[in-house]
Amino acid sequence: MRIADKAVLVTGANRGIGQALVHEALRRGARRVYAGTRGALPIADGRVTPLKLDVTSAEQIQRAVEEVGSLDVLINNAGIALYDDLNNPASLEQQLAVNLFGPFNVTRAFLPLLKRSKGAIVNNVSLVALAALPAVPGYSISKAAAFNMTQSLRALLAGEGVSVHAVVIGPTDTDMNRGFDIPKAPVQTTAQGICDGIENGEEDIFPDPASQSIAEGWRNGVAKVLERQFAGFVPETATNLG
Image (cartoon, rainbow, N blue to C red; front, top):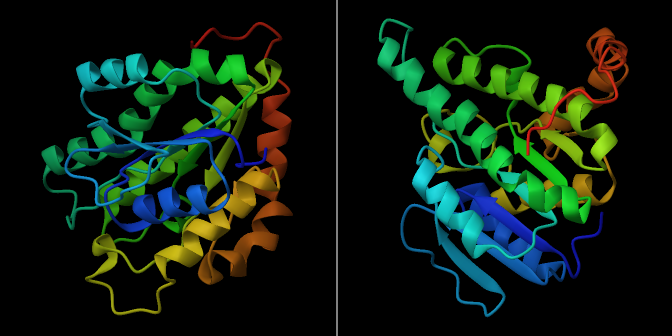
């Protein structure tokens, strides 16, 4: 999958990693970049089409589908992280709504276009999908669920010619990580790593220095072996998500 001459949709594109992904896709020669945001988009380029897209709104998702003529790459980037201690169910529900059901519903809506183009689904998760960070347990739970969803979609859509990628993002210098006093990768570095992983066909993309430090262990570990074994249980006509 080369990004040049392709149509790419990025959710959560108004800032942070999402905004950097829009710029990186343009730098690599994307034909069209659909930038899904809930507010104003500070990017002026004729190849960019802003989309009003709150991933928790079924109406906005459907309107976005109607505005996109063709699509090669869907990057589910929009997300939230709340500090909590699991004493507030509403906090967990909010994070699941954005970080799990958001990409699930966006993916389902755009899947017919992606099947047509034999495209790619890219779900930005996090290192906390592999091991919970107790300072943000709700976020950790939602990202672990999103990672499991990504693995399931990968197996279910393999026969449709649609590739599904999980991006295991380490600490990156975004507003979301402002409260953590730790080394962080620049957003440009993470965006470049994500696009490199897409173009290299990596199932699990480790785009920054922190995540790259565990990449080999994950790819050669027992969890990855189990994923591949379990994928063998998918029947040839398993689902029709689109």
